[in-house]
Length: 215
Image (cartoon, rainbow, N blue to C red):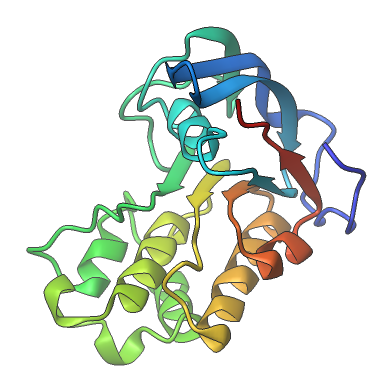
């Protein structure tokens, strides 16, 4: 990993919230995650970048418990990654956004919290420019709006760890800034934020950068 680029948020801790030791998951001899070791502490925003096939999305999937590693180990928020981890422990914004088509934007966001905080939800709707669309169904809004809703869903309660895959890929400049601001806000609240991205604006906002090597 590179040296520190920005000071971690006030919630930073010396104890890592995310830790990987020689973590690996290969899908073929030339595609997947080669062994990598790193930590992310509470209050940090760390960017993962690398060429296509270097394993950025695979790394997030392993840490989210969506697939098992081939080797090495990982701990996230004090435990081993596993399917159906509670969102208060780990929340994920995947590239395939996974929003429920039968729910409105607001319902999708609120559904991620055990006891939604109305003020927090409203703040996310305002800051991510979603309030005017909050009552609409998923198929009635743009991909950019859907992606921002997925970010809001992940942050409607502050998770211990936030895993985010290309969160600005559908955003214009103004909305990309809003998304980046929410990721930094999450870190300042004490979340360990790990972001896979090609977006240099996201890289510039991170505290540190993890470079993955392609085969």
